[in-house]
Length: 363
Ligand SMILES: *Cc1c(COP(=O)(O)O)cnc(C)c1O
Image 1 (spheres, rainbow, N blue to C red):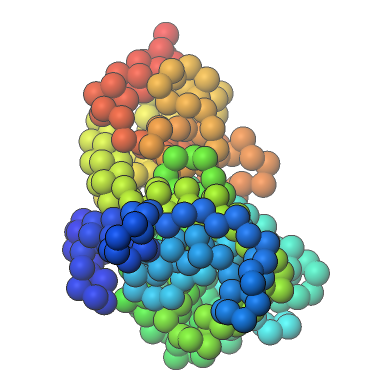
Image 2 (image 1 turned 135 degrees about the vertical axis):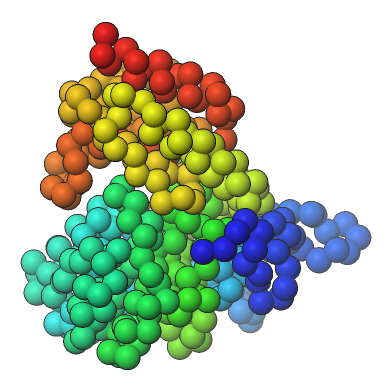
């Protein structure tokens, strides 16, 4: 964990500078300031691009920027789940994968599906229990880390897990969707692959689906590039352009969302209708458990006016959701837990809306 603006790219520019300046055309007369959207299924033969499923200059601009923010080489995908699927497919037939029991639901469900079909075996762990994770590394081929987890907000010790996983000969993947490279750079802590749902904070405006992986190892990069080309799990040029536009303000948005989340977590701790507040101390996601149970949680989601009732997270707008409304959510997540994705609005307006709805629950 580093302070905002702290972790430095290998080129020694701070994230705020990289986010704004990377992935642009050269500073030459008549060059546009922004990389254009290249709508192309194919390219004139004889160059490096060849075909629209292999390469696109708009993807490249996004990938260059996110790669520099995370400190590795980036590949963009059609969605976060397209990236998850490609990475899970790295393991050999019958290999064992370790994953947090409270990882993103789609990741846990994909793992369960692959296990049910005999493709691999799965071990679910409490990722904040480092001793248990280290013990589970023995004999594993891939250790999946998500930190903070969704929606339990448990935090993993990435460096300790990476050391144990590497000693066991396993790859380490960190889903960095919640923290973003502004707050956490897992490759610096020893991870082999960083994964993102750019649909969330990186895009930041709830208007696109995109995924990404970042690696330092060239061989791993080439394998993932080949898998992306063969599966066709590639992003649209417009989505890549929007995501790059989102990246330009990433540090500002994360800074503001985090400041709002810290303040709201503090105020929520003093509210009678809330029996538990989970906040890891950084990032823009807060989870609360309602004293009066799941029906009160549903009512809260229906009765706020600024906060919108919707799944997903990481947009400029604040949203909330009772996670157990999904039948497939882990049974260890409390029924009355509401996940808050704190946006960049004025914190007093957000509090007035949320606390008003909480006050009315008791009435
Ligand atoms: C949303 C999400 C994903 C999946 O990404 P999509 O872009 O929705 O496919 C993966 N991991 C985490 C932590 C997420 O929040």
